[in-house]
Length: 415
Image 1 (spheres, rainbow, N blue to C red):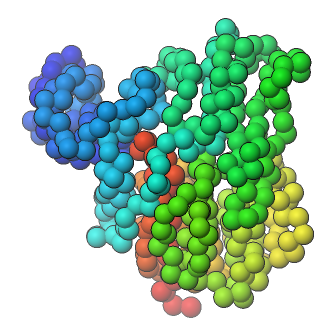
Image 2 (cartoon, rainbow, N blue to C red):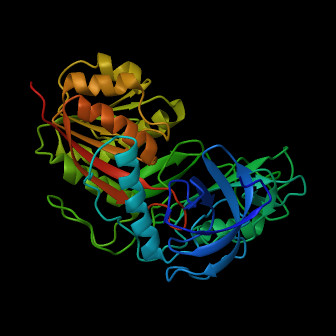
């Protein structure tokens, strides 16, 4: 039996959820960060359990063709990226395969209809949101891969230019007010920027402490407060989208692609009553509103609902409810023709899935950032009478293992 500290030579088979490469040794699985499928590697055993080992990559004896040099000075130390050592096409294939594996293993869905991952033309400088840890010295950074220690970062290849510009200004100067974290957010289409909380005494030329920033999606402007959730990848891009019923703008961002895919898969005729569960600042609700009769957005966060209400403006066929989805959806009056679900990483509470099955909307689009909980919830919905029509991965997070999916379900049970 291998003991921690021992070295092994193993052949890596595939990438798995969480970003590691998987190998096998003497009947047990070995998880190896920063590996690539097909590689022969030497690893040090760091952790040993009854059914698996966790190793540290020491040497790549036979590199895979997909291995590329990482352009980032911090890669391997910083906990933000897992796949900079992989060619981008290989990252997209791996994300599709991981979704397939999760649906087969957790949801027990044979040959699930998972489409190729929608990528971007440039997998760098896409993030509109950074959360920096602040040291007492005023220096900013992220957490190392061991999730304990601080790593000063002077430039991040994932961040949009306004965030790196702010980082350069803040580095070594973010003192006062017992700052522990600084958030920088920006609008790719508006040029707006938010830095929070307030840094310094107000005399510093870099503005901070703004209540919100603004971003545009599909031509509509959205107000987003410091604590409100908003998709991180809003940079315009040019690449084809697999749309069947919806015309696409010339340069949709990945966040806009999610909305376009959702609208397309709902097949709206203008007569539907749609529920946008976990509606946040109202993105899906307000961008779907011109194509249906009514949209009801449900959101627990008071801050996000304030943004959503401000974003609604003069739109008359959208109303928002501040409530937990598991409380509001089961008691909602009237019919529900379609549902958009965009839950947090933990997925849906059982009461949400039960309410959907009981109400039987004809079409459901489930937007997920976590394949494991998506698989768990899809099993419930399929058992309840829904047919899984399609799972479309969308790469909102290049260079990382994180996967966004847009899943379409159609009611096939009895009415």
